Amino acid sequence: MPKAYFDDVWARADLFGALHAYVSNNAAPALDPSELLRAEWAMRVSALDLYVHEVVAQNLLAIFQGKRPTTLGFAKLQISSDALLTIRSNGTGLASDNAFDLSVRTRLERVTYQYPDDIADGIRLVSNVELWNDIAKHFGATGAAVRPHAKTLKDDLRRIVERRNKIVHAGDLQPGVPRTAWPIARADVDHVKIVIGRIVDGIQAVV
Image 1 (cartoon, rainbow, N blue to C red):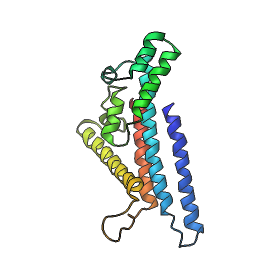
Image 2 (image 1 turned 135 degrees about the vertical axis):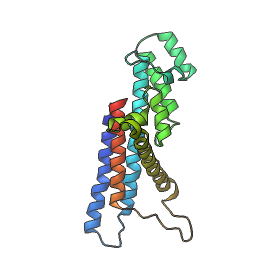
Image 3 (image 1 turned 180 degrees about the vertical axis):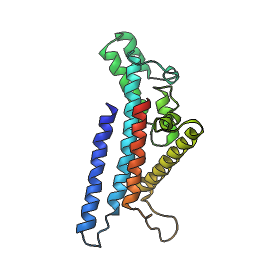
Image 4 (image 1 turned 90 degrees about the vertical axis):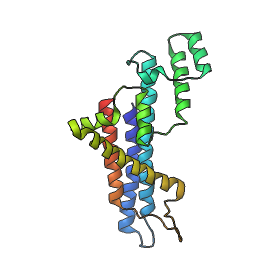
């Protein structure tokens, strides 16, 4: 199940939090533990990315197998000619399932599911829900409050992903000279945990 993959990576990210607490309380002041927070931040976004990939891939296969209703997005899905030939040659069964799954996962390798719009595009392949609005409703938003609630959640995620990109692609360095790292605190990463956790809970509930 997609959530099991997420939980495994999430638990590994918790180890960075435990290490940060230990180093903060026991290491010499010269040893800066903030890099552990940056690693945790990046891994938590990675857990979300993996989770959405699995939601999309596993549910696409379920639709192909007839175990889940089809969607408008599924109707537009493109798979490789090799997969099509295998499916045509073998008909219904394990060989066709494996060919379809491999083709889908090969295609998804080139996609990241981190930014809100990209996640919504992925979910649209397997579900007709209005993802962010439906997540907002799941968390209690009603009427005119739905869109602002959804926007707040998307904006929070967008900022988290932008910071993740600074960490993994630019050393988390600020512009200017000398280039020094952006500050980071335990509370910042705790906010990342809350936001991503809510998003995953929301997807679990509405997809």
